[in-house]
Length: 342
Ligand code: MRU
Image (cartoon, rainbow, N blue to C red; front, side, top):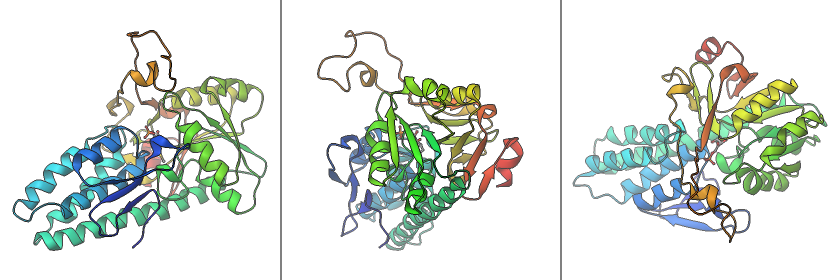
């Protein structure tokens, strides 16, 4: 069976094993998930995260639930589970796409046993496509980099957020494999520190020369001439090129424009949502204020009860984006034309 390490089926195929990303880099702990409640909890607590990884997880997750569903009301039951799983987080379009692809394969019938087989085939296809896609995006991104250059990235769009290589940091990992000397600056990415905990971990393991900074230091790094180009991932790209990604991404884009630094979004075409006209129509997840008030220290980080606003994503307006790098090529403005053409 074609598997990746951080999302895989249990040997009997009736459980989904994930590397719990919320414990990294301190602990590499694997969890086996078998119920809908465990799967939605894993998504919402960011034990599994990153747009393409959520699509892969959603597909295999629904298959595991189908394995554990009686034949009697099979089709009603997997449809109900799919609705809950697809809506566990709202912003990344890949989650609902992955779940709905596997559901559609199952609903073709003609009976539960055959449906389970088709669902597994479809879940594997999503994974295989993502491996090929990330590789192609990494190749495309690498064409923009020269030896010695420094890429600033925000949040985590690496192997843990996908299947292999990743999107935004894929070119850095591929470049390192080919003996290039590329450098990276990773924003720590408050409040959940995906940049500190995951991106710098992945880049160190891949042998990429990475420097971790606080989000508030990006402007100064650019002002010092330390950044040649910005590469970020995406959770949903609207038809006009407006792009939802981790909160703080739009700030990086504004800074890049100010300092004349190219700003690229990297993502699979499965993250394009051409039915969504612009960023105003992208649903933005709001998360628990405690992530800001108290998450990382033993002592509270703010006065108890202080009001906090915790949007998990923001939208980078299309006019701040130099290009959108996909597995099918690089879309450039005007995105209304170049994205549908891909
Ligand atoms: O809240 P997260 O950690 O799921 O947010 C992830 C991101 O914003 C990534 O940049 C995005 O999903 C692209 S992953 C290739």
